[in-house]
Image 1 (tube, rainbow over the protein chains, first blue to last red):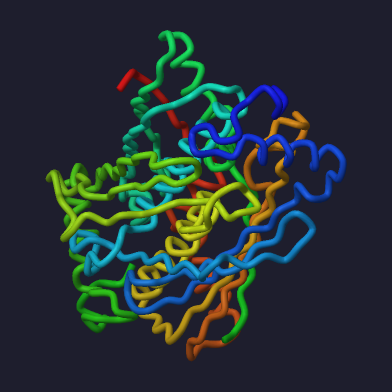
Image 2: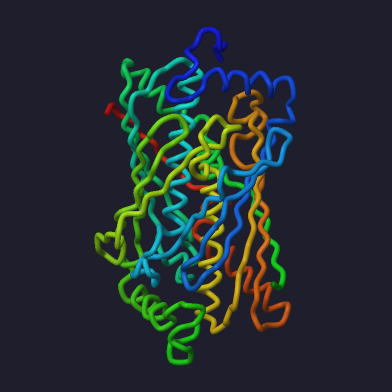
Length: 190
Length: 190
């Protein structure tokens, strides 16, 4: 990566000097790179439940968000809910969309590439034979997800494709979702 | 699964008759089980971007939500954002939390099991050496996610564990995240 001296301090809305300082700090003190992210969730009724995002740890500290964020979930009527919020598999697409976009923007900034605008669309296929347990050959989750990025940047075509690949090259959600993550679940009585 | 006749019409806030009717309808007309979920995303600046969830298809129809849902993303200050919203990897935990909970609630209802309360907590580990490209041996995504469910239900202990397993047994997000999903990305000029 280029050094802070060669780059403007703010590019794509990213504090490039801060990004370079973070990289240098991680090289000096590797433990500050270890983060733990958390949510807590409470079921309301039926398909309605709500998560709270309040704290996380990283940079060798316990940290709190400026305010707790409340994230809701419901299902549309056709899936027996009241359609008061996006459903879980739509939230998963948002996680992917937001992570690919931020990863692209940060890594372009670190390379001194200015991006003017990004729009993207995401579509994934689910066959309810899986969730409803009607056919063991059909998976419960997404069978595939298609993404289209539209990027405005004053760069040649090959450079545009390179920018797009910064998203999938570095996104934590893309890596988690495409390569899989071990999830351990325990349950106890409330 | 039990038939609608033996069960109350509403259990755990789930219209069990509707759930059984859905299962019968899918058996008769398999194509109604095919759903496509979508989000569109727009970058604002830096780590801020926003998804809109407006339409989906399923049950052989193009469907729209009661209203479009806006989902935001940002990063905390330590990750160079303004901390105006949950970050992408926190949204991923919400997707997992909401899907495990709803899957548990629906499948318990289909089995005639009443659940009184569910709370859960989720924590995942990310080492920024991955995202920052400082160590190719360290993955960019979650290294692991730990989940604790607390369930209140008037059932013996072994039945409580069985309820908890309905979540991971049927959740589309759990399946997607633990087993991985193929994601194809295209990019064009805006």
